[in-house]
Amino acid sequence: MLVASFSGCVSGQRFVPRFGTTALPLTASGAIGLHDSVRDASLRLVIAGLDEDSAGRPSRAVASYQRAVRVDPTNPFAFLALSRHHLEGDSFAEAAAFLDQARSLFEVQRRLGPAVDVWGLGLRAGIDRAAGDEVRARAFFDQARALSPEIWGDERLSAAELR
Image (cartoon, rainbow, N blue to C red; front, side):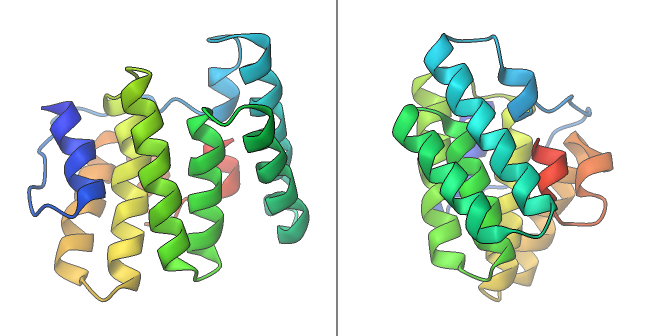
């Protein structure tokens, strides 16, 4: 069910999952130490980029995210950060592409579940809203809020929240 949920939100299917409990999201900081030193180095670059985004320095943020991908091209948090960044910058096609890549990496690494689905559901909702599909966006925002109301209550993912 959880695999279908994140998959559905990325692939454009109309299925909207129903979750009943909140989840503690897995953040970039929380993922440090779960893999090898290369992943940790890449995660530190993602965190530095999120800090740059929070400080209003988007070009430095993107440079840090791109370095994170070069260090570890299998780091899904680098692609989540890029998706979030591009959604905030109104580059919706890029946001969707980076979200799809993050989802694929989480799936291959067997990390799908509420702790990461919460990012995909909310980002997909933002992308759908930007594309003009308010009904679908509302359904995904409702699901993201059910998993993590403290993050998705405002229907926006800040850099600090993904950090």
